[in-house]
Amino acid sequence: MEAPCGSNQSFPLCAFRFALLMKHLKKGRKFGRTRDQRRALLRTLAFQLIMNERLKTSEAKAKELKPLIEKMITLAKAGNLSSRRRLTSRLPGAAAAKMIKVIAPRFARRPGGYTRIMKLAPRSSDSSRRAIIEFVQ
Image (cartoon, rainbow, N blue to C red; front, side, top):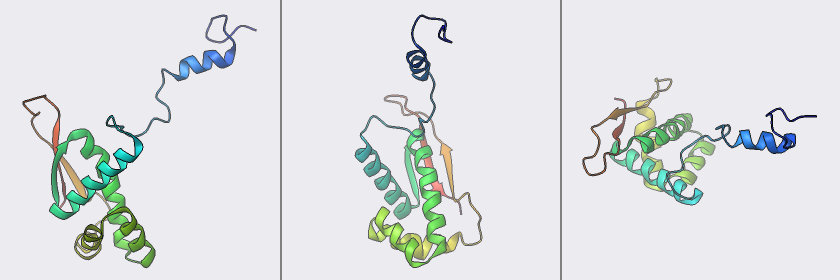
């Protein structure tokens, strides 16, 4: 039987070759870091956004941070013990406390869309895309 890709290779090798070209199951950005470094980066960005309520960063980092923060706010809105414990496991204590006491009550009646990303001009030194991520008022 001839392989579907038209070569003399066996089918599994042919399928593997095409799998290298397609971006299936490749969700998320890597930022040129290992998994632990990415987690630490996103945790630090989330902490800074919660404490300052506005953050200037690269556009890719802002887009990666937005769903993480939105899920944390939804978790904080529940306000029960398990959600508090989950927040404190993901954030430093001061940020988790501010999230529960200040930010979650502000969005109590809002069903979603707690943050916005505003694009800025590229940085002049390396032309990287910049953005501001902030909480919607």
